[in-house]
Length: 185
Image 1 (cartoon, one colour):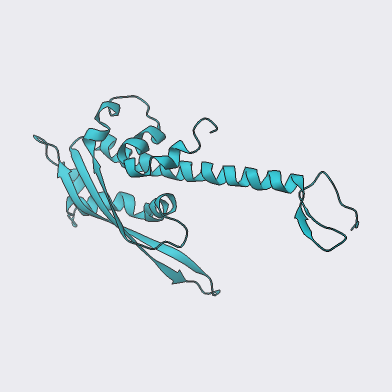
Image 2 (cartoon, rainbow, N blue to C red):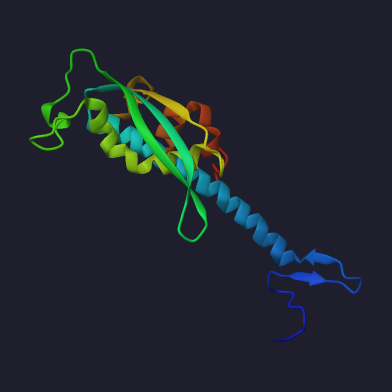
């Protein structure tokens, strides 16, 4: 390996006096990484918007949905840890004049479910995605989310809907997550 400093690749340089300095390509790389992290946060948020909007789109009877999310640190066999998240549907509102179809209430012919459990079956695998989008790394605090069909009612008849738009309307307290990267991605 050469001891020469390459001006074209990202690197640190050590000066004559021993000081460490990031070169310009490295500074540019760091800026791009930060920009992509903002874009990743935006797409994580949009995914959550798509999940919830999809429930309203697929279930015409669904008027309201309340979720509780919790997380804890779990340890793996190699000594590392990871966030384990869970999601619980705590309340479901049925639109006036509508009822929940029987098919939604059956996991199979011998195991009827309550409507909260039926909807949770479609969401529980994504609890970690909600945490990734809405909580900082390492934040295991419990939180609740509430969604109301009226927030997206005008979008439900559209043939195609932006998940970002759905997110902004349903997760108004977190709208900054998708607006931060607008215009770039």
